[in-house]
Picture 1 (cartoon, rainbow, N blue to C red):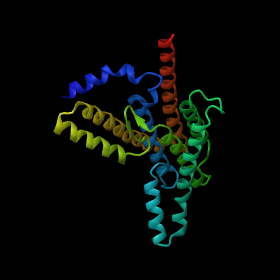
Picture 2: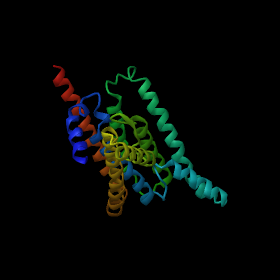
Picture 3: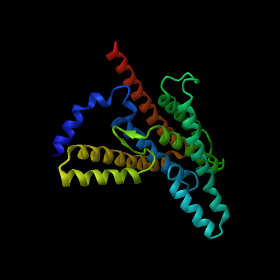
Picture 4: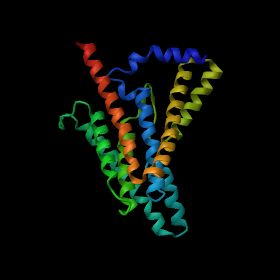
Amino acid sequence: MVGKVFGTMEEKSEELFSHHMIHESVPFGVLLAIVGGFLDAYTFMSRGGVFANAQTGNIVLLGVYASKREWRQALIHVPPILAFIVGVIVTEWIRNNQSRLFLRDWPQTVLILEIIILFIIGFIPDTISSIVVTAIVSFVASIQSSSFRKLVDSPYATTMSMGNLRTASQAAYIAFTKKDRASAIRAVRFFMVILSFIFGAFLGGLSTLAMGVKAIWIAAVVLVCSAVLFSLGKGKNKYESA
């Protein structure tokens, strides 16, 4: 059954790499998931133990510290939550005004914006308040999660794993109980994204220990790879249309 799954995925590779589908493809999703895991590990280890992506965790910690009347610790978790909200708003504004902004491919614009911001963050010394940096990273995570929300034919997240894990588990159950090939393919895709997120967290933790605040540049490099993949898909689509 696994062989059939991978065979079917290979048959659909041309479809996945078309210009209209490239930012919904599995390779693209894998790269973004690596970045998602990396950013959480980076901010947690180098910027005060606060998550950049997992706003559920920040909200819980906000409530926990508030219940203990540790107001300073509670307030540390507010900026990343607010920055995440701003990121959603900015993404929607770019999406709805791409013609006025003369943007042919707004997802590519978002990638470039992410790369620039992460590159700048690498120059911010650890003497600067971690709250500021974590808020900026949360903004980046927000525009990524708001911009890239579909993996081939299913909604997913590149900056968190709970929903992906639920979808993967549900698809695997259907695949094994009903011998459903489409569900098996979906399960494989989502487990690939989850494993990529874990790898990103591992890479983020390892590189942060070795490089400190400049480790964020590794995430920027992965995003550059995503941008190159997007451009290749775009170029291929133009070639096929010619």
